[in-house]
Structure formats: C-alpha cells, structure tokens
Image (cartoon, rainbow, N blue to C red; front, top):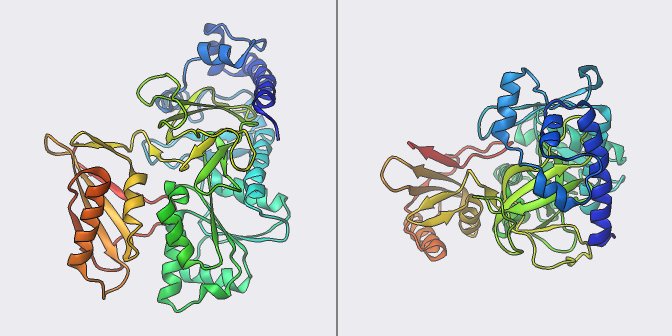
Length: 426
C-alpha cells in the first residue's frame, strides 16, 4: 500500500495529464483553468486547490440549459462518447452525463476495487436487485462484476418475491441493492415463510443511502439475512464510484485516492475541516477525462477519520460513519442541526419498527418534525412504542419529536433511493 507521499505524487502526475487534456479541448473547464492561471505544469496539489474555484451542481445544470442537451463539459467530439447516464434528480433537475470508452473503463476499474475490498471473487454469483434505468451505478456495478468473472444476474422487472426465489434458486452469494431494499426483501421473505438461512448470500453490497454505515440499520439487515454481512459503498453519476467499505473497520468508507483528489471542507464556506469534524466532500475526478469534474462540491456530509493509517493499514482518506447525509438535507429544529442519518440511527434501534417517515413542517416560524413509525407486526404495544421512540429521540437530540404508529404495510418500500423525509411548506 502507498503512503501519503506516494498517493499525492501519483495524484499530481494524473492531474497534470488531465489538465493538459482539458486545456486542449474542454469548453467548460478550459477557460476556467486559464483564468485561474493553471496549466499542465501545476507545481503542487496545494497550488491547484488554492487557485481552482469550486464546481457546483447549479453551475452544471445551467451549463446544460444553455448548451442542450449535454452541456459544454465534454473534452472530445461527440462521436467519441458511447455511454449515456442521468442523475436521479433527488435534489432538482436531472443532469445528463456522457462517457467515452476510456472513462467508462476507468469507472469499472474503480468498481473492481469496491468488489475486491468486499471480498467478491470470480466464484461469486451476484444478484442486482433493481430495475436498470439511466442511473450510472447500476450499469457500472454489473459490468465490473462481469469483468471480474462473476456470474451476474439482473433482477429488473421482477417482484420482490420473484427476486427472492431467483436468489435462492441460483445460489446467489452477493446481493447488490439499497439498504432500504435489503430490508424490504427480508420482510417479504418473513411474510412468505422463506427461510433466508438456507440461502447462500454472504455479502450484501449496498449504496444509494446512508444506511450501509449506520450500525442500527446494518444490524437490522443482518438480522433478516442471517448469513449476510453488509458492506457499504458510495458514488454519484457525476463522479462515478468513489469509496469502498473498509475491510477491517465496519461503518467506515475509504475514498479511492488513486482515482480522486478528495477534500473535506466547511459546508458553509471553503476552509478544510479538522479530522473528526463534519464537512462537505469535494472531489476532483482524475481519470474521467471525457467528462471531468474539478473540485466538485458533492453536498455529501462526511467525517474524515482521525486515525491514519486505518485499521486495514491503508492511508487513503477514511470517512467515519460513511456518508452522513447531504448538506441540503440538514434541518435546524429549535437550534439543533439534524441529519437524516442520525435520526435513522435512533429509530432503527427499535426492532419493532419496520419502516418510518419524517414530516418536516416548514409552515410556521419554527421548523417542526413529526415521525411516523410503521410496526413490524400487529401485536406490538403501540402506545408503549410511541413513548419509547419519543424518549430515545429526546435523549439523542434534546428535542421533543412527536411519534405516531401506523399499521404494517402502510409506508412505501422503494427499490431505489428511499425518500423518508417529506417537507411541508417552506
């Protein structure tokens, strides 16, 4: 494994190659680099960080509006591009993203690191429990596992029960899905009397939501899948696969710094945060030359690790607790900053809760929260569960958050990203 000096030397070499290509052909970044006084001879990473302005999502959306449909952040002629992806549009208008074969293979190589860290080998049978749409992660995960030699089984266009039957019939050993959908599959198995302990799933590779690094959510998934071990990962359509689950330390991600220059900055400003503090992850893609990002503010909130190297011996940036949430998801309730992942960590500790929903009421002068908790079975003492959840939320956040209990099967179970926080007014 490389030490920090080796990592940064390799990053600088890759950055210089990237900047040379962008100056030669990228209409979005070429002028920005010249205005910042940057060239392929940039002397240090610090010089790049101090001179290059941030890239924000709103700027990319506006560029695609002004230069439809793909924008001007393309380094080559359009006929070099062979892949189309689209963002999930969870925080606004979707963006389109194009990739050349070389950039696509760079992302597959990054995904291969995710699979290797999770212990996935060519002997594994991998089930992808989602419908394949225009979102990048589906396709890159599938193709990377195929290149690794795995038997890859697509689960698109199937009911949850049909997916469970396919998982058991094909002796699947690796399941790829969101944390929410891993829970849903486990629920359906229990409802249908399917014993998952007779299956072969030993690794549940999750992404798309913070749950994969939340201890209580991981425990809930692993109770439903007795042989399974949850492994987290994260990425974005704009950046590609970014991090892998630490092989030695649960609930910790590592950024692939061979592929990205990573920074963690104050969400409200631009100063770097200290290890252990919460900040916003900023990324520069070093190998996605056809459609790059330089100092992209991802809006992902993370806590950089205090320990270096980590327990696995690696020196790549560690993120304690994985992705904690998004800067645009945080709400302030009577002076307390609340992140969705922190609320989930409290609610998931109650085994009687199968699903939940948070209503954020912005109509008054003060923001208020209400929680709906769905019971896992009809025999639960509802008033007792309400009191328990309200007590635990008050203990965690020093806030009174009303809780109401709803019947089993009331709340939705999406196969893609769950939207549990619903804003009213504001």
